[in-house]
Image (cartoon, rainbow, N blue to C red):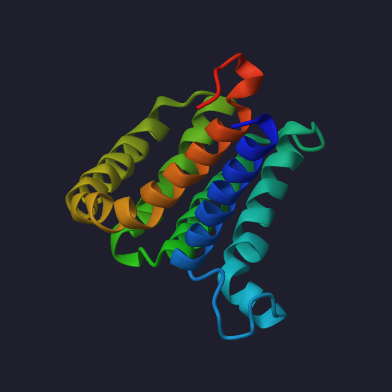
Length: 177
């Protein structure tokens, strides 16, 4: 096959993989309201109300406007809670990702420890909350990771990678089929 044929076949695989991923996560549906404002807000509310404010707290500290490391505690909490909520909303994984809520204060306090005065007393709740979160995440996630995630993510991602390999095969000096 020539380079143009490989590019077309690869693009089809990439498009199919992306469409399957979007459909599997209910971001794309066939009811006609694919890109309605309400539908997008229902899927990405955590980005607007949790992740962006968490990033704002971090940018305040790292930009030098406020060098008080205490601003990282709410920033870390909002960022981890936002990521937990966003991933749970997209993947419908509330029953698996809920330990992220336990992890969030541990992340905020660890950031305070790292960028603050390095008070060792902060590490006690960090390790307790972080350890509990890891134990709960491990015990609740094994079935979900090897069942739903494989079907919903791995197979479509494999199609995307296969398509990209077909597209860029000749650019690396590979031979035609």
